[in-house]
Length: 61
View 1 (tube, rainbow, N blue to C red):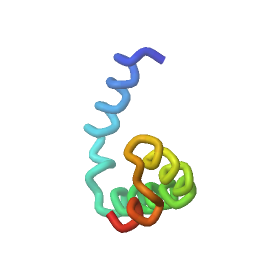
View 2 (cartoon, rainbow, N blue to C red; view 1 turned 90 degrees about the horizontal axis):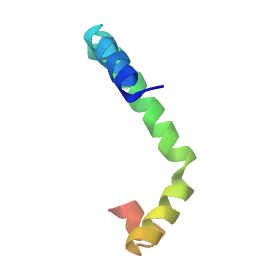
View 3 (cartoon, rainbow, N blue to C red; view 1 turned 180 degrees about the vertical axis):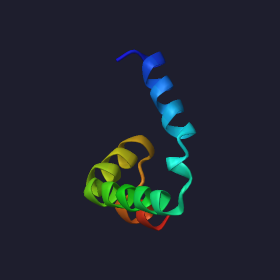
């Protein structure tokens, strides 16, 4: 898929107003939270490699 096509699809979706309802936003946030939880270990590893932060330091900040 070309970047221009992807951009057009995203723009059309945004203009459909589906992204503006509170229920849609809440569902997106729940999905994002689950994604973060599922990949928590990978995120800790990446942050350690990039910044040298421990798991604890990453979690609390």
